[in-house]
Image (cartoon, rainbow, N blue to C red; front, top):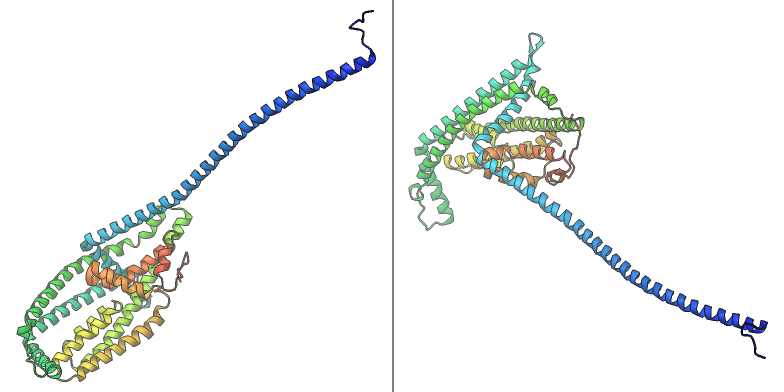
Length: 424
């Protein structure tokens, strides 16, 4: 009997179901394996993309780092270039505008002297009352103007007298040259003034001095005119400051800076004028005691040259000493003048002046010498006289701003600068 194919025994059915399950499982396993392989390949592809993306992000980060590094360098170069250009323009302005700026700066110095002197005049009793400020300033300006006039007249008279008496001094110069040659080279023939052409040099030098004094007299009138306008404007300066419309921080900074500059300039000029006057009076006593010619002129020269740091006192001592060496036949007057005047300058400059000046001049000695050389090259003798006040004002102004505070620290004596501190 034929067996029906659909007739399946339970054991065969179970076996077939097991085989089907196994086959289905194998198929699904292959499919899942294929899917896993596809998924892995896709993940691998995605991994490559992710890696490349990470590389791109790393490259972009490196690019950002390079740009960040380059940016400060470019900013520093730009800042340095801007500073160099600014300093160059300032030097060009100082050199080109010398004839215009020198009278203004001299007028500022005279203005400070007028204010300091007027404060002393206000303390004088006038019929039991205090002298008005305007009257005191007028008296100070008149006093300084007359003093400058008499000083200029004395200088002109001294130079003219020295030129007239040159016939008296020239033979003595020959005698001193012969004396030096007898001590150093006894067998040699000493040269004369005519051979050395010193007489021509003296005439040329005297002409230059007279021309310089003439130009100084013309400049002096302009300086006094500037001082008069400064005195007229100082009463309106406070109102102009208020009308600028600055915020509180800027107004305080500007006010403190001006106060510090004003206090430092008044202290420096006042103390320097007092010590220079003391040195000149004591030196005049020495000159009169020795009997050197033109004693008043040499005393005035010491008074003026005492404003020039370092080299001023040396030059002011050397010139009258040279005249004493020519005027007298012995070395005693020369030694008395050199030793006496030098002792006076050391005592006043190193003992009295620092006690009176205090910490007003917070300036390095090296900076004093360098500024003296710089301003003497730019403005001559006037630059030498103004080198210290200009440098002190520069330190005070630079100390108030963060970008220039390092400059003030380098220029200062001890590295300490006053920031935002009102002077007493």
